[in-house]
Length: 99
Figure (cartoon, rainbow, N blue to C red):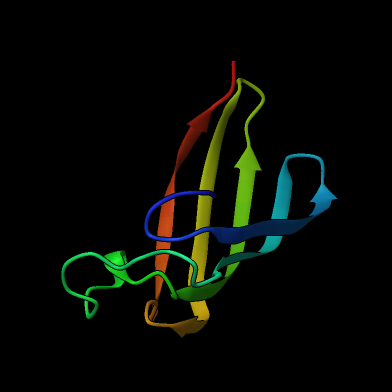
């Protein structure tokens, strides 16, 4: 990513495991690493304007695929490390339709 508030290094990696044909599990990680070459605007205490924020997030997700293209998804995201941003985690669930 190149732009406000700073240039960043972004990375997203995941591993999938299919124990049976309609079910798979995903384990992943996501990194946002500000390289501190931008200029802060307004209030530096607000993370959106801090050019030096860094974030490492882990993710676990389970997906069950029905034969008609509909999938049920449930997962958990967790902020594992952060500087100037990122705390806690969240559960999520939903549906997907593939056409």
